[in-house]
Image (tube, rainbow over all chains, first blue to last red; front, top):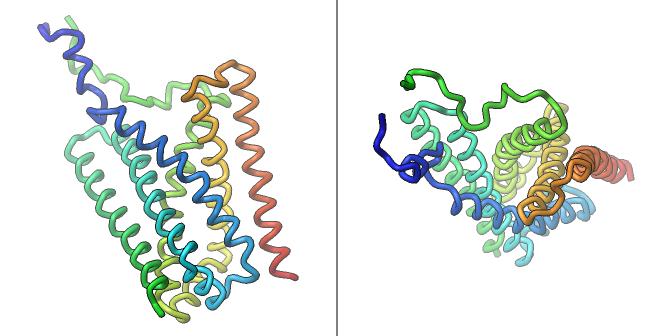
Length: 126
Length: 132
């Protein structure tokens, strides 16, 4: 029989060991992604063609590059938060879970960082 | 008294639910989220290919314009639009709006059918642009 209080048993017993901060960040990034993703979708649809010159010229405009970087950054963050919850929910073994969480975090920084660096290269090329 | 060895259900325990619109759409929200995580990798590859020059971009275009590539792009379009509409549905719930049974069902169908219709619109525009 446990002598821990009901509060003590509740605290830290969720699969993630915390909650509101993660939940709130998920919502804030979700709201930010509504205009950012729609801007991206409509920009691509508005381009006359998707050949190299057209796309590169479009991306080299300051506003396109700036919004593209914001898009990749917030998408990466939002997607990282979401997939993290899935790992926390469905991977019961703590060791395997930790490995997955580390792997996800490294992959997101790698992929998102590469895309942001690419947009900067286009933006800063004269 | 209680045996700690008894297997307890872990958080979503999806397998105990009867399939109906509520949990189906919830699972679809997660599934489209995972699909979009893979789509994010593709999106980042596309940005990297633009910076990489004309040949890198042509290689990326070749991948995306292949039959399998187009199927993935259509799938990501639907996933994005559904995740967007259902995400807005979740935001309404977060502020306490739309919990009534009929409202839940209506907004759910709106999210699925709206996403399907908008996917058709987007790809209709893409193919119309190709021919013009």
